[in-house]
Length: 111
Length: 111
Image (cartoon, rainbow over the protein chains, first blue to last red):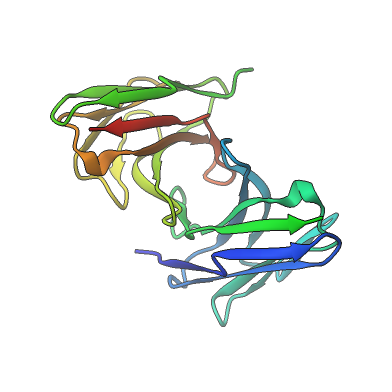
C-alpha cells in the first residue's frame, strides 16, 4: 500500500517567518495530495490540495508544490501568524477513494 | 446542514465490552470512512465504504467491523474492546474521493 512520510514532526517558527513541511510518497499511481490542518481538540480540515497534473498551487499565504519524479510534495506557509499554530497532515490518494496520511507536523508560531 | 456527526463524544469501556460508534452525514456523499488517531501516528484508516452497499478494509481493520446502514450512516463496531483500541476515532465522508469532511471525533478509553 501507499506509505507517506512527513518531516519534520515538530516545527517552531517566529511570527512572520515561513514554515515548510515536506512529505514523500511511495506509490507512483497516487494522483491527489491534500493537506489538512487540525487545531487542538478539533477535527482535521482541508486547507489546500494539488493534483498530479499540477506542479504548484497557491492560496493566499499557503502554497503546495509537487515533484512527481521524486515523489515528494511540500506545504509552504508564508508570513506565519499565531492562528497557524496547529498540527498539519499531508496525504496521498493511491486509488479513487482512500487517503494515506503522514504522521503529522506540530507547528508552533512564537509571538 | 450539520455536516458529519458522531456519537458518542466520549466513552469508557472495560476490556472485553462491545460498543458501536455511530456516524451520519447529511451532504449526500457517496463515500464514508473510519479513522483512528493516535499520538505521533497520524490518521490511520480502519474501514471505508466507497458507496452504499460496499465496505472495504483499510490499514488497521483487526478488531473492528462496520456497517453501511444506508447512504447517510456508517457505523463502527468493537466486538471485544482491548486497551490497544484506546484512541480518538474520526468518521469522514466525501462526495467524489477528493475532500474528506470529518466529524468531531469520539474519544474512547478502554481500561
